Image (tube, rainbow, N blue to C red; front, side, top):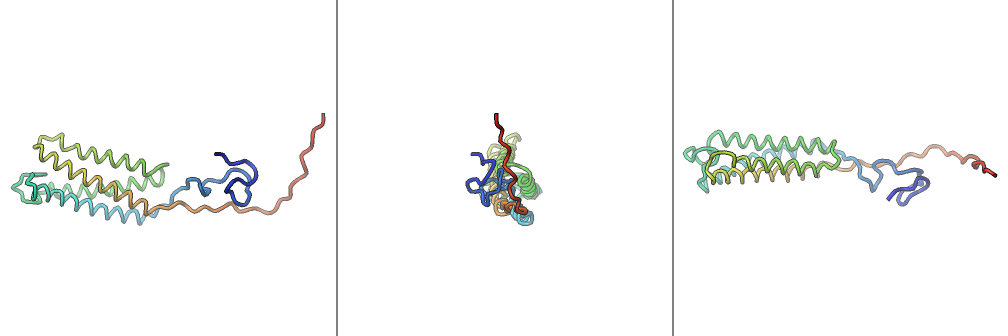
Length: 190
């Protein structure tokens, strides 16, 4: 549906001539991003991701007796592999927040691109353990923990981004001083 080039259009207040300016109500407007709120949510997501990694290792090792990340002799929480996994989970959450921030500022459809990026990265992390020579139970447990971390990061960062953005307000153009219409155009006679 195109707007008329002259005179008021449907829903175009004030009768301003020409097409509506960018960001007119009803059109897609650029987003305002509250970076402080977005990054606070990113830090909270990093904490959740790190805790989810630790709980996943605890569940696999302590409850299911699957030696994820190290041999079962290293106790319920394993060794430095567990610490590395929690740090990597937190770093992934912060990286996802940075990607979301850039997409909000520059991408035409930020959530669509974020979902694709985050879900493909999660799929890659979940498939990674199957490239190792570990037992099948270890591969499956590690993949499930990676999948849970990736999905949690995707959902939490996306939700935080929704709460940290809003459309920029639209202000109608200010009318200039009154200009009386000029003389009518000359008519041509043949």
